[in-house]
Image (cartoon, rainbow, N blue to C red):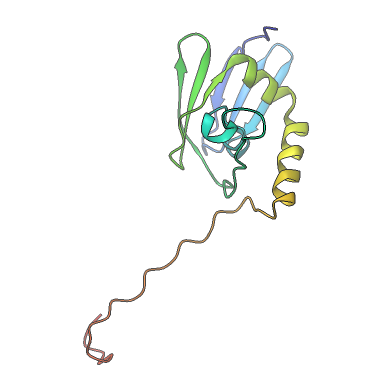
Length: 138
């Protein structure tokens, strides 16, 4: 089935969401939602049952969007992910099935005891100067 194409696509100024405007209405999709449901092989795997649950993507931003021919949108995310091509039908489904798909994702996170938050970055250990901490080195 072919779904309608969006009449307009807007990236929010904060780069945290994408709005798709259809004849049937306006749908705002958070960047995190788009990222965790990327159509890429990295996320979807190579068949049913091979999906990789995306964790720690809260706060991800949309760096750039680009048309891929006349059939899809490529989204570049702040975490470096850019391998998914969102065809117009998939974007339509993401927009119109947002509540169901988002709740399904949250349930999978909970079942995996995983989080939407990124792991804290480890702070590098202070440099050791072999002087026993004399206080002269910073």
